[in-house]
Amino acid sequence: LKLNLCVFASGKGSNLNSIIKSGIKNVIQSKVELIISNNLTSGALELAKKNNIPNYHLSLKQFISESEYSNKLISVLQDYNINLIILAGYMKLIPSEVCRLYKNKILNIHPSLIPSFCGQGLYGLKVHQAVLDYGAKVSGATVHLVDEIYDHGAIVIQKSVKVNDDDTAESLQKRILKIEHKLLPEAIRLFETKKFNFEERKVFFT
Ligand code: GAR
Image (cartoon, rainbow, N blue to C red; front, top):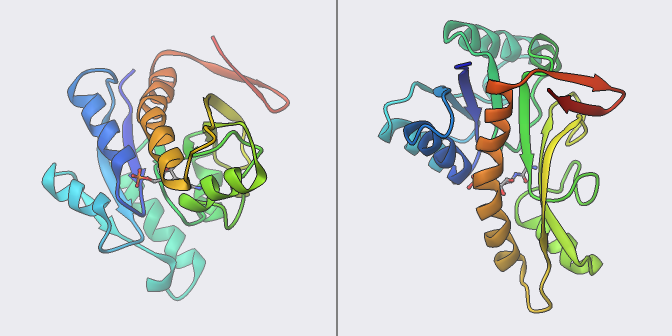
């Protein structure tokens, strides 16, 4: 199944880049048809332009209300027939109207083993610093379905990495990012090739 992907990204966009590359290498069949960033100077928007992918700079701040913002997002997503949304280093909440309309069709990647070291305020380098401060011996990355609560939806896939004694937040981030770049395309591949069903919070792909 070929899906029309929309990637939301706030920062550098290395996960976005890995999705674009996976498409080029046929690791996934789906194509990134649309890129949305809340940050005008993000690497993600630069990547969009470099790869000639339609892109929008949209953030809640540009609108008079959340519903105006949601309407704009929904109309853009529908214009491009998007059927899978990927949050790849997206640091904002997706408005609840969009969550409802795209229920079970939004994925997020988080750089820890959820439910540890996640939730509001824990993003990017802060996650890795929190892991080190806590003295955890393993960390990793999680791809999960998005609901209206930060980092809360059902888990799709996870992969762990060992925390080394001499790790810094930066070195751990670097090692986990490498894993993320494989994990996110792998999750997209699951949505292309399998059906999924739920049992409580548990997701099964068959
Ligand atoms: C990634 O490590 C991603 O997991 C994390 O931000 C980084 C973005 O890097 N996301 C979060 O912390 C979300 N809570 P990138 O812009 O190079 O893809």
